[in-house]
Length: 440
Ligand code: PLP
Image (cartoon, rainbow, N blue to C red; front, side, top):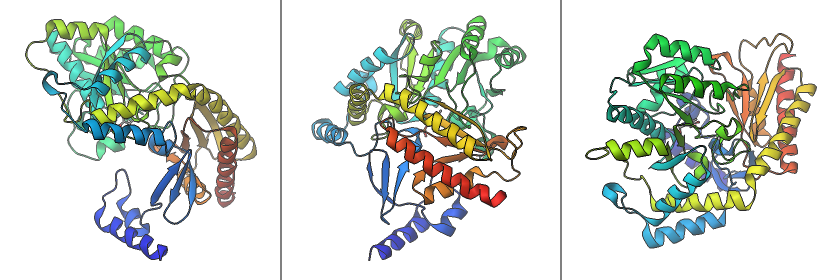
């Protein structure tokens, strides 16, 4: 009976559901890999009776884990009292005000005011528009260009796609937003050269993820962001951080930038702000920029989403932050991140096809190599096969194969414990072993 229902849903999925970031052919051939019905803690359960460790917190976002009654109750209470009201034209609501104030308390540097969106892509587009608007107000309208990094991922709205360094995302469409350019990954000197070659007076901002997620989980080398901040200051360019993944405890500190002791001028956030229980994102701006906007603005700030400052989403975010703090999840992320890295190192010792392993808090990666000494890669990446083998064994993770990479990435919920890390590592080791045997 249940099998019939599963099949019926799978058929409807194929016929009517156009999935985000999914191979259409694969969907048509195989149908949905999982039809999830429930989540509890670090685990997801599917209609077919299977369960899996959610090794990526779904999309790097379910920081407090699945199935939280408190969050459901908060959403219910807020929806009952005020399900929605607009924040346009100075209208406001309590949860949005409280959340904006809370964010000012916890954010790096002197970020002090928040523009709310519904997710990370909207946050990125908002940041670029705000940066350019700021320069118009400052009497430097020729400052339009946004510089980003070659392996960056900033989302799929038009600005966010255009800022995304990963070429396949940009090649998906054949017309992008103008005034975006890219620099090589971890070289401050490359940024300086790019600014010079583009003409510094035409550059509005530089944007970077504190730790890159979708682009293959790259952790900045020591001193990188301090150098970046210096260069931005030297040329009077705004420094925007994209903390959509790294925010809210993911890397073992509240924000990714806290590791580097560098204050951005603007910060994009989303995902972990609600742990995925509601659609919310935002852009924070520094007190200095806010003061300038207040002083120089005339007329209306002509940018706003219907759901900017959505009361239910903001109430959920406040409860989510309360849980993160009450349960010391940021410290757990740091400690369990070390466990995860230790586990990766054991796998690296045992498996012949594992190269570099790395983690910062609960953001981690395992690289697949043909030759550990030379770092030579397999012609056909093996990471996707490892991900499939892991899913069969009850672990969800993701492969990154852009730019000749062959990497499996992880970001489990910040609630994960030692036993669950051990289980994750055992499944990973088995999955890699299964794939290793096919190339031995
Ligand atoms: N920025 C970064 C760093 C991301 O990782 C993502 C999504 O993964 C985005 C922006 C886009 O966020 P959203 O999918 O919520 O639009």
